[in-house]
Length: 173
Image 1 (cartoon, rainbow, N blue to C red):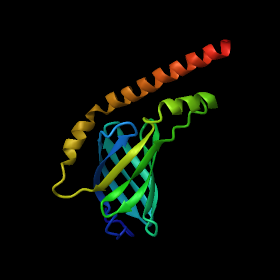
Image 2: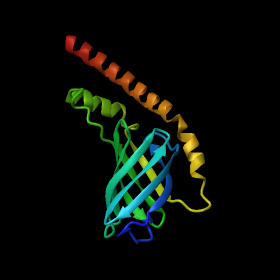
Image 3: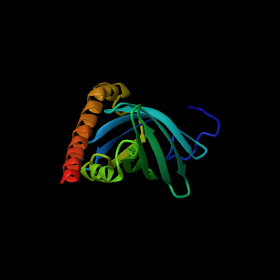
Image 4: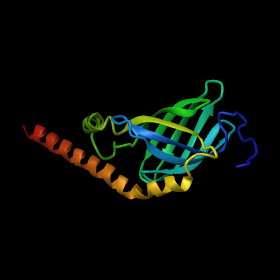
């Protein structure tokens, strides 16, 4: 991580970070193990959580202490925005998956309403310290990533099917 122009601000050390995200309808913390690099107002990196491995790409502003990042999984992307302070980075996330090629605007609106607490939430990440839980322990928890993906998408498909049935019934009447 000793890249040229690596950020020198003490709130943003490049290296190992850890933290969690929460869904909008639950305070349950879903752990993340992350490697981040901060260079010339650009943040990049990778990590793993209970969904799947992911990459980060975004930007930050030291004048406003704001950050925007895109968390990219193999199947979808999540947009993160937040504040930077002495406790790390914290803020909100939302799923910006483009469904317009698969559904009409009204169906998408209904789906977003049904899933509003599953497609957005909060997060907090911070630089890992020497006495933090080991990365290996977090990685072991993430082994269930494929089960989590199945759970998320089976739930999404069930609701989508329900919406389509209701739409079909509404169109026929």
